Length: 89
Image 1: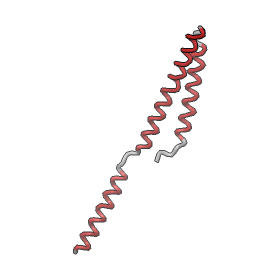
Image 2: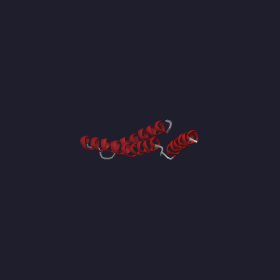
Image 3: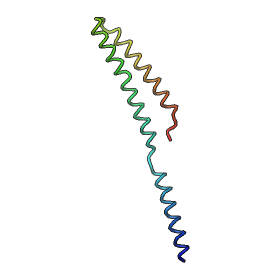
Image 4: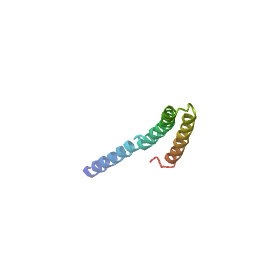
């Protein structure tokens, strides 16, 4: 009888640990989503800021702002593609 209770206890602990692993959220998936969001915001914002500063220093109005904004968008998309190639495990 004691052996049966010991076997049931180990079986319960094994099943509880499997359930805990199955209910655990995909943390790396959330981290990848946050990285994508950061890239999509920071790329164009950084490019726009640099372009605006160049326009202010040189005296040209929108040309560097537009160029660096588009460059920031392209870099953001390139980085998102790189992030999407990683496995979310």
